[in-house]
Image 1 (cartoon, rainbow, N blue to C red):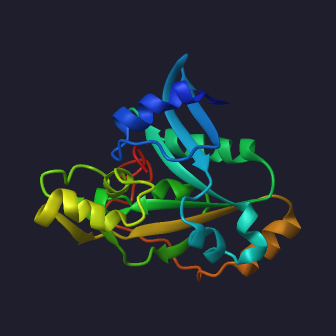
Image 2 (image 1 turned 180 degrees about the horizontal axis):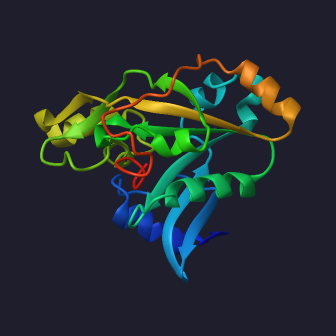
Length: 217
């Protein structure tokens, strides 16, 4: 097994065809887990799409250090594959970074792979709503919103096109994990600047960190 940098051409099929979201976020760094010469899994990192998140994690002083582990996807999810991929990719990232990642409760994810990699746990994301269209519930909320990207009033445009089939639905909350890279002083100062209180790791009846929530984190 080996972890190596990979190209967009290599990671894109995993994000589109394997990951439950079925779309590619903004990706700045991408790594793959190669097993016996074949690509078994991918992990990608990028600037969070949410500007408030970049400031909200640790304040203005650290907004330039924030990066999101925004996709983690494996084909077979064998024991230790996910944690190996995440741990080695974090070392390969290098630099002074505050890495944020989320485990989606709507998919039954708890984030055991992040727990195995010693991420800090900072609770659940805030309550929000997603845009939905009846008959298209299989689409990610952001995919729905992207249809009218650049339109001054996207909600009005959606209502005009879809009428009563356009609606808002509560968004499933996500477990928020944070990992800090860099020198000892940076890690200490960044940790003390976190705006989210640290909490004990969440658990479910599935306490196996290699099963149930790592294939499409």
